[in-house]
Length: 465
Image (cartoon, rainbow, N blue to C red):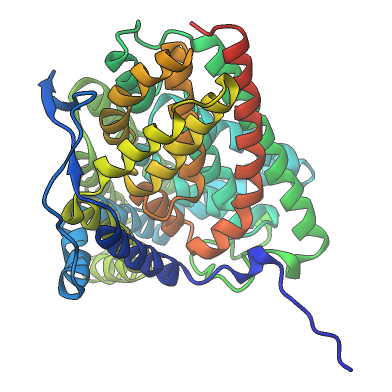
């Protein structure tokens, strides 16, 4: 009798389009099973904040079949800014790739550092991208993701390794950043704590998580170096990202330096705008397009060549842009069914009466669940923390510990959240489908969650303030 073979659970993960459609069906079903409900909200510093104890059930608004499919184009409408920055980033990188500046700079860097130091390079890059996530933000770094793809392929890695180096490290850095304005900043403002207080414990946690991320990337790299067929990136499209000649033949031309200078200047202007002029997605998209145009002119491309390159780049970026809008339809469905506040209310009810340590860990788990339905960090904080902070005090948790539990729940699940537009956008820049990414990152997410729970228990023991 022939022996039956079974795939491992992580190898059975369906295609990313299927995953998201399953979530769309699930949320639609929830609108029929859960009562519609809302908290009262008050305007504080220009943002709507929940009033604790004000939850009330309203008339049910279950989502029908037509409205379920209608939520998909409405999701694209809601996510249009992120969709376009994916296209703008793809256009910019496509023009730069056509100029050979990225290929020549990466080839020259690897030649000078030596291929023998490839594992060290992976570690350094992981920390560089991680600290960008800590200090700069999330979607703000989208233009740097394809550079990791070129570097990974030049070192003998694959596109999944590139995503681990860039997307993974930035997600960990951003999610656990001690100075994250969207999660820690918003949470501490709601809790009336000094801004970014308690930074030492958060910094130790963030640095420890990035060390684990770097080790995880190197371990995967060694595995695919020994057996390339075992890599999760096998079969992904690498056209335009891989080096086309031996490493020793690479050198930088004057034109290459000019293109890189324009790119660095554009990023500098972007960062200045983000930190000083309140720039966000649309302004960054505009800068990316300006960089693309300037690089094309410097590289002496004629109008026809630039136009063809632009359309080719859009074709490559289009699947990722589609996935961003598709994922955002989940948020639209939640709003249609009015079940977001209902989920927050019932999760807080479950926590009541739990022992202290179990309450802290359960609070982080409840925030993890909420993150799949409210993927915006600040949005989740405004919706849940006004309820969770007083509940935490009743249970015996300090306000700082409650915010740490919220940050952990939001930050770690960002690694595997199909509803998070920024994650989908950056993975698309590496050409890594969500299903392969989850197969790669899920074990790491579980390890990091255990690390965070240990730190959370330490916070409870020390009465973290």
